[in-house]
Image 1 (cartoon, each protein chain N blue to C red):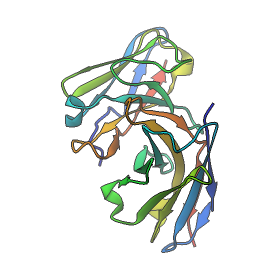
Image 2 (image 1 turned 120 degrees about the horizontal axis):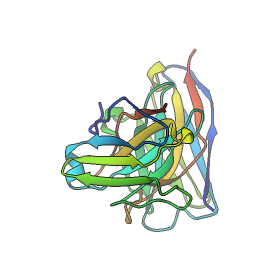
Image 3 (image 1 turned 180 degrees about the vertical axis):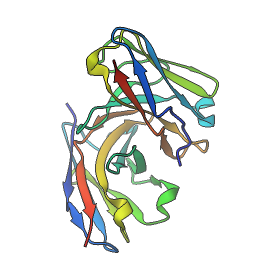
Length: 121
Length: 108
């Protein structure tokens, strides 16, 4: 059974950089046909897709994040990471990593438990 | 703003049928997936593709689509179905993922 686990700092100061990693176990991020995603949810609000990385390293990002975001994979560690620059209080959210079966269009079938990141001085 | 539109809240009497809808231009070209989220938990996939349920999802959950509108139907709603429900698909470019704003389902 595939498992995803987010890790990283839960508190980031305004204007600084948010960095999170999603560790994947029970499967390989090298498997073709999948995208590895970051999704966030501000307190009391809905889900927002941040972006994804495919096997091979190609990426797509939510245009609303205006170039502040980078998602990368580390095949040797079987994980993928999120970097979000110049954070503000509006970036406070629970951050989830999730797998999408892109080729089969089966949606986000596995999710991490989520990690709360608070932006505050 | 979301390119997929959902009603913010819907209610259903216990044991009755409820339909939750999701509208968006991209739904004419791309399948929608549906997720259930209970407080303090990660979302869980309940419907994907044309009308498919992951293993373990009760068969009272079903999906359908027509034109720019997709629907999640719960036939015989149970108390444990009370949750937030989100739809997701692609945007019209096909390159980006979008979520609906979510529907809070109350089972009366």
